[in-house]
Image 1 (cartoon, rainbow, N blue to C red):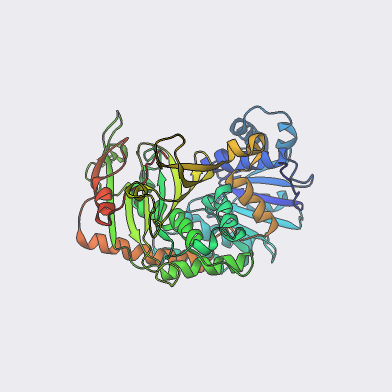
Image 2 (cartoon, rainbow, N blue to C red; image 1 turned 135 degrees about the vertical axis):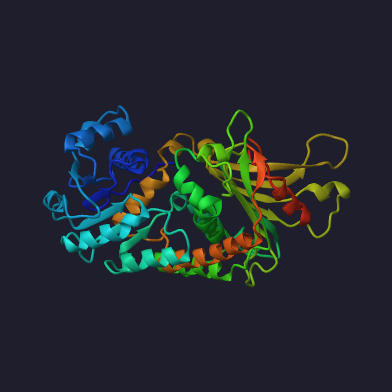
Length: 474
């Protein structure tokens, strides 16, 4: 299998927050890999802008440290320039204007706190750096509730049209997430079964082994519901539950995702947890310096999509920190056969399509077969495995990571994998209602030991429906 690399048009990418963690850990390495793959044209340039007192050589050294030793790196670094700039004042903006050329495509990456989105957007426009073809990339968190999301949308809309704004969620750039759409809509095998008649339930799990990892101030204000459910898990749910779009193009895909969010019923069961000490790790309260904190680090909930396709089908969402394994998985669990001709042994067997997003991207379809050997009809569940590293061999190493794909989509002007403003607001409306409901109850999150599988309440939630969570380790 040969991966095709399609070069993009010449572009200029300005990264605000160019000395921050996101730029060093994700954006610059992603650009380097696209350069190495031959996708960046000769005229492409990257301009870093931040308040740090650096010169271009200093930023190039920072980029080299972030990328690591590599053949051809000097050629890539020669495309980089840097400007010291005040995001909320006028210092440095004339220098940025001089550093910019006259490319056909210019994109601004707001790798900064959301509080800086509006000041940056205003200054980009005021200093003559934007035109009708300019693109703006904004990272999550896109607000912390519906009101703040609306305010951010309004601030960006005052300077840019909606088709110029790219709200990035790196989960949507993962290869397996896009393969989910190919599997659903490119195979007659699945789509006729993708409904309440044949699907028993769907589980979406995003489990992390890390704690707050240097994000204590932000995380203690946000919690797992705002940090993960409102965006990452909501987007995965949309792709699983959406109707087939008329065409695979941005407007049609995002229209169908929005319909899913608007059809979501309020969560019927919701469990909040917070990690305690365990497995040699500190409790959350110690990590954030506040033993009385009531912020949740784990959420499990049961949702339903109120439409004809999914009526009565539970969607179980689960995410947490300091769990036993790092794993992101979507599991579509199909119903039992209507009648077993093999006796009671068949009752424990089900078809499951397990879509693994990390750490090992791929898909497994569990099917029931006869166990080899004499002695009667004994049934066995085995996976049809499409783990990319095993199925594609060396070609799997060339699969771009999420940021590589998403940045190149910005340059192409393809918004399919980016959230639209009304979609963000609809997701916050649903999330806010759930948060308001639990805050009204006043209950503290249930403690669970670090390194475990979460609070017992999540197991009780599933037992109430006579179901079990899948093993986090996969």
